Image 1 (cartoon, rainbow, N blue to C red):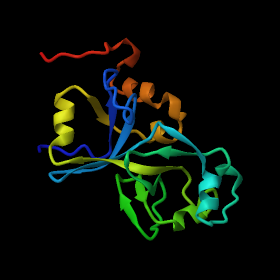
Image 2 (image 1 turned 135 degrees about the horizontal axis):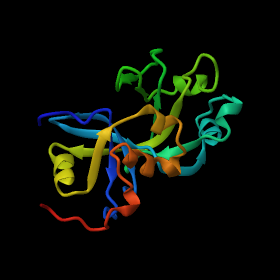
Image 3 (image 1 turned 90 degrees about the horizontal axis):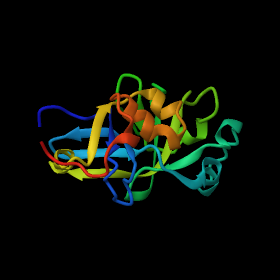
Image 4 (image 1 turned 180 degrees about the horizontal axis):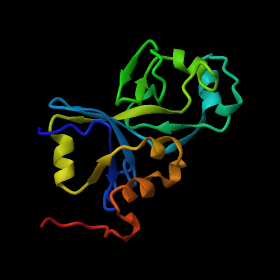
Amino acid sequence: MKSSLQHHFLIAMPALSDSFFYRAVVYICEHDTQGAMGLIVNKPTQVMLPELLSHLEISNTAAALRAMPVLFGGPVQKGQGMVIHNSQQQWKTTLALSESLFLTTSTDILEKMGSPDGPEKSLVTLGYSGWEAGQLEQEIVNNSWLTVSAEESILFDIPADKRWHEAAKLLGIDINLMPNSMGHA
């Protein structure tokens, strides 16, 4: 493997009809010779964050969280919560994804979200997406995915239902104009 796709978006090609990844934007959290792990960042679930917090018995009633949907992060460990955020504060389990983005899997961050002690910007997912060594690279060769360096504005400032189109625009592409079938040159 020549380069890592960590801190990149995978943008599902229109022909990718897999039920989990149809029109998905995946933020790649880790990518090395062992495989890859990422979070789908444009598929809201029916669960709103206050409902999840209540289920976890976390009493956080911040008004900013009321309209925040929990995202479907992927088909692996669907009950595992993960938070992508921009807070450099160290929570119990935090991994740096870039200079300004972090991934936290511990619930201590959920207690502070929406408050001055929490991250300014964040999104919460349940589950994640994973690829074995070489699997993601083969899917890219097979024209399942476009790749582009991730931009925080897509994660935090663009509504989930617009992220697929906006991520493609980072490549200068109107994804609506791409054919549903792709060949190899």
